[in-house]
Image (cartoon, rainbow, N blue to C red; front, side):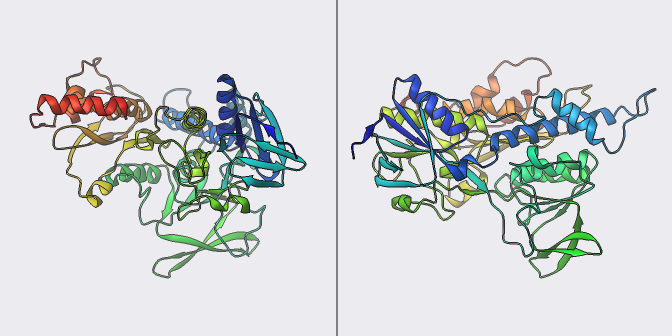
Length: 472
């Protein structure tokens, strides 16, 4: 059988795969876009992401408007009507759910039977596809824990919310310790739903700095979320005409949580493409995700992987950047490397939490010397909304940034300045000396940075820092 030659084969669906196909086409490369029928049928994760963020915007606006209650002619209901919520979501362009965008240049092939002949050669039905490079950009599926009595249609996930949410639930149980679990729990509570969050960990968002996570925990409790830490779901039962989720704590204590809607947001697992038996030669981590280096190259020659395939379950915009970089390396080895530690991550609660770089626990575990510089992030005088937050900087004894966390209304914007400082290896003194607009939120960065007292750095070492950053 003669092989059909391509410059690149992209396996998968979703925004990462689409952007990879577009990027390769922009570079003049002939692309084969191969999708698996099982993954093509999955709900669009990016669509669910947009829907959840839009609901959060509505909930935040309502929360701030409630602070004005008591003024003449202003009265807000404690529970928003479903029809009103639909109308607001329609104005934001996320209701009814838009048709997923599938168009992209290149030849798109769909099938359930893929056979890997060689690392970069595939057989799809009667066609043999070959390319010098192959990019794995398949989707992931929501992780659903084993719960006795749970039926496939008995729960929602963040992905299928736009399609399956039919009304605002009166009682909602959210299972999971992921950031999106905290986001949706707070959102529904602010819309008037009674929410219980079942957390498997002993604290909220254990991957974040404890001081920052504590602020988010308090924000969720202020919204009315009942948080059950160190608990796991055991069984779904029917009692007295209603559904009940049985949970168990680490100490063996059990509780029964009645609910109208069950939302599972426990994280994600590799999709159908990553589970293909023929992909068994790929080295994976303990969670089943493919391991790659800083060029997105896997253990198989000519095979690259990105985004959800490698466990980077982040925002859609981050997937687009990864797709562009991965294609650049697959087509032209030696392109700029991708450093995941420079990727800002944001939890879209209210207040949001954003972080970039290394965390204090990691520095302690690796015995890396560091200093902590922290400042409060307060809303400007007269602001209608916004909660007190913080700016927390981790720096080397020489005064160079190692990691940063921001909690507060402008966290998603402020973290960009800190990501740039980390990327360019700027000393904290430069952040502290930067001229800033009066009464701006970013003054908290300067306040934290000015606490640093860097030791004198020889001129040759500063020159070496700049050279290393420029060519890494």
